[in-house]
Image (cartoon, rainbow, N blue to C red; front, side, top):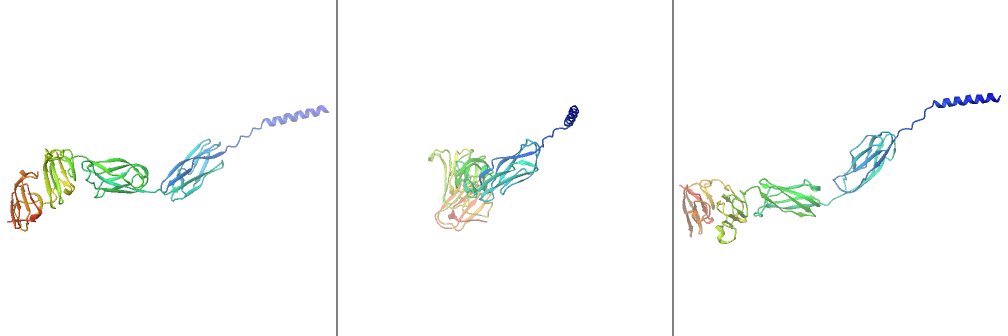
Length: 383
């Protein structure tokens, strides 16, 4: 009987072992695991400006991580909204902080993902601050020797940094003013047609003055007060100005400052409507003061029927003929001129009137010019 029971037990064990041999082991379940990392404490950022920092989303799981959306607190944004991150992969998100007011901005960035474990939030913070602003201003003039010649219409621009693009244009007085600039080191450019553009460094620390000088591209054909070298600073030729009383100029053969260096010493002691000077290539230089105003290569007016006090070109501004000054007073002085060098050899004829009364003069078509003082009054052409 025991033998039967033993045989039956062996059969049962063999059957159970056969059943267990046909059953496969269960595989582990794949999952996505999210992690967030990054330095997102932005600190103080100027209102209206931006700052960026990187947020890294990692997937340390064995299944793809499907990001459906990302939530940002007020003042913050990012360049990644949704997508799939592979197992053992990562995604860098550029987080931007843009403060709109002077206040603290704090909160949590939340990365929403489907069926993921791990940490999906990270703290973010920053403070908007109002940066004090100042004014950069100054004067733009020609380079030596004419540093007193102001330049209008010069575009002055800050090239770099927080003030990049801020600009102003000089007025008639040569001055510019750029407001709303912040402290720091910058590069400033100044540009005007006919002049070589300049780029100069400036350190702004509060309201700052920066004066700039520009070099002409070539010899000047228009110039103001200063001392010039002929053919180098200004070309030889005929120049016209509308001077004020006290205009003083000199044609120079040298720059030693002695009387021997002066070819012609001119002084206009009345308010002339125009004055003319011929500068020769053999001259070393030309000196002119502020009362002479600006010299041009073109006449200051066209042809007129009469002659006003000043110096005028025959055939260009006055016609040849006989003229009468009906209201001359003592001190009236006039000259018929063969040229405008200012030398004694340029005078064809002249007269100094010591008493009041009408004056007559005949100007020839071969004359180069005619000058008349304010005491002569106006000259009228007569038949």
